[in-house]
Amino acid sequence: MIPVELTLCTSLQIVNFSNNKIVSLPKELSALENLRELYLSHNALKSTEEFDLPVSLKQIDLSFNSFDSIPAIFLTTSLSSLEYLNLNNNKITSLTKQNDSEDQDC
Image (cartoon, rainbow, N blue to C red):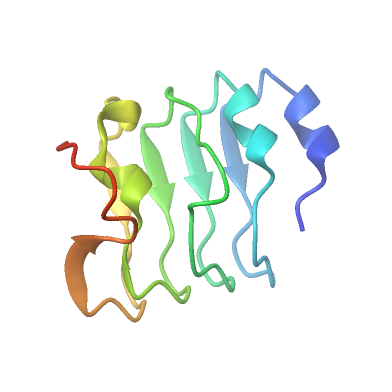
């Protein structure tokens, strides 16, 4: 688990938590309003429904995790600044969002 106290470092622009055993992220991650790049490859993430991401995010690497579909957060307008999304080497079998209750497009 990533310590919630990290969210007090509001000037962070790049965070790399690759190659850990992270299974969840703190909801407060969205408080990092200057965050541009987030690297979470080679972890144990299965879902992003439990957390919010900062709208400033331009790149996120979620490769080598355990997603079986595209996380809903990436199929909404909330991350309109996102330019790069890596979901390589997951268990994705469907190109639909995890939470079908929201019917918004990119």
